[in-house]
Image: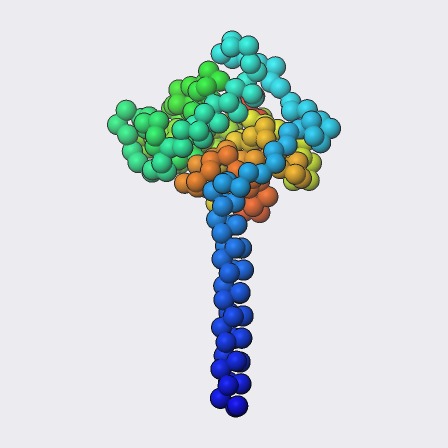
Length: 230
């Protein structure tokens, strides 16, 4: 009898371990499916929170769409192409459409709105080299997030708003982070009203619900594409 009890106890232990493994597998599977967005999330927009996205007064490329909206469309187009995250130098300055980094999302989105960020930055760097200590080569200067941030500090409208003011985080805004990343805010929002980020850190989904996670890394610049003379 004692031997039989021992076998019964061991069988119960194995059963419990198997149940725990199944539960752990289900939880892990859920997070994997969520990470790759195989499980769809409900999408919201500004109107769900009783405000509207701010529109730019400028339509620089004369396509009938304001600049802020064009920037979002351009960023989404890059996200849809899902370029491989590659940090590389290109002799003709521009990486192919299927390669890029966070900084490439920015100039591509602005290009869709009709702006040539390379030209704008090349001029500013040439006229004010002391403002750009990391600038070394026009073929890559405009793609480096540190240089982009300096250009935005000098010429683009800065927005100072607390995280809690969801209406102050507008679609098309460009946000720089302490860890060296940069993202464009989407017109899609999560259940709490925070906009999705459009960026390329090599993650599987380039338009994602990570506003708070990245904000916790430290925001060092929040800009709205309006050119200023400073």
